[in-house]
Length: 283
Image (cartoon, rainbow, N blue to C red; front, top):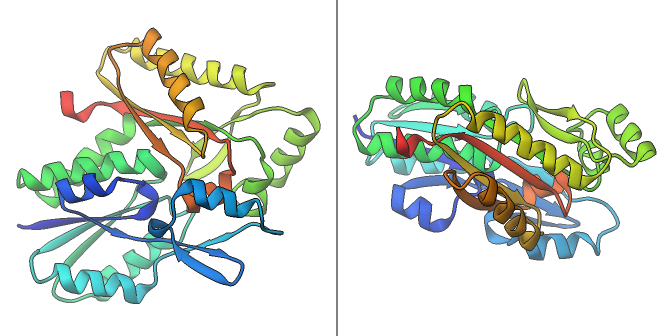
């Protein structure tokens, strides 16, 4: 069976990765004033600079169902099935749209997957699916691998301003109020596909140290790890953090990524995150 791998733009894979592994992308969009832009057509630096000039925050929107249908029409000419991997269904309606389309679409078997997360963590599933599809794995085998990957997947991040998450409806109001009053830098994570507070920390420096500690706990379990530092327009800060992590855990395979416009809308500039899991390339 010839299987195509589709994802959305919030996996923030590079053009080179998509070309190398034949990965297809459905772009989410950003509305900035009267202008709506596909996030693949705007770099993060330009996005955050433009946000500073706006009175309100941008809003994000999922790919149109017609856009998805056009892509699947093209894929049906070359493939028998599609595995479509998307950001958490609690952050966007993208997964549900593709799931609905899969029930009525004819001529191509569509298998949607809710990663329950986003950004590079979502990208781990996409890259592994593409690798396995090349090796002629079945849809069932790929989904079984996803289940195994979820067991070691971790993702933690720190934001400079909780109000972005609250105004976008991605975090409870109570958490933001506490954060504002106490000037804390809570560590956030995904729980049941939702962004929630993992721990409340007083400073960003201490929050990053705590995330390092969580990484160390998994390193001690003995399996190979890939870890990705993700930043919202603070690349130098992310590079410095990576240098620190490499000193403590040189055996880990490190990658650097970013929070693009759609996720950056909810997290705000200055956010830093770290995601990791068992390194599938070393199993």
